[in-house]
Image 1 (tube, one colour):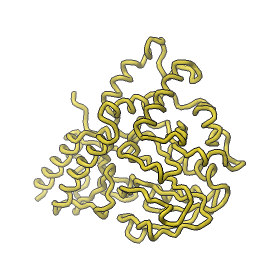
Image 2 (cartoon, one colour):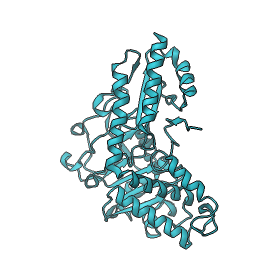
Image 3 (cartoon, helix red, strand yellow):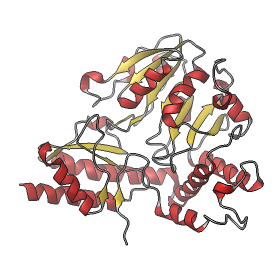
Image 4 (cartoon, one colour):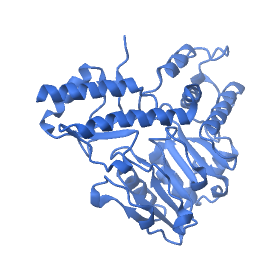
Length: 363
């Protein structure tokens, strides 16, 4: 039976090859007689798993040696608290608010710091991105937070800002949950990056944090020990029991990415997938995407039927064709196709075929 194409925004589709490997190793990992989920996180076997996962990820993302890679828990929402607990020093932090996720991040940070708005795209209903030259970054900002891809509204920073050119020495914090490993990262412009794994890196449960070493060791006194980046780093992400099976599956995903040709090849594929879908939407009088072309997300494509009374029929027809999870987020409505790394271009072609056939049927 052919698997359907799953366009879920997260937890999202994983590579079938990864799932097949995990299924084959479920009861016995490499002759240990144990499933990975049964292993002690302090044992030699899991030590090998996490060490390889970290090394593979560092290679894939070209993470410099002066950055620590941490495997944590709590998801992106958890990091909305953990980042200010570690980096704010109880002072002011500046946010570029570009959609639902940066809004959530700012609200949560306000519990631990003076969370200010440096820029916002609210006036355009989150369909554009404010030019970095217009950002109002305070001289006392401990960091500047950007959600580099807004999963719900479908806007993406295709180039990270260089804060030094804006006259700021503050480190840039990016929430790259929904496009990590879909493109390269310019680490010279980043102080910390975080993201839940459940979109491009594996299953829900493990959260990736990549943090510059000089930013570690400044946690507020109220920060829980398990969320203090220094404690986590000093203990190799095993101060408390980590999400072992999620790390194992993420590690298998890193190996799969390497076999595909690495991040450069994934970026090439992602550009092709996104262009295929956006090109069809733009030429159609039946559908529309409301995001400015220069900041459209390659990962999350929101679109709308111009006659929204036909939404349910569209979704029913999609499900019959094996095209799943296309309903847009409840806060914005419409449709959303999340086309992460594991989505092959054949899935996007199948979606375009359905959209074309439905438009013809409704004419």
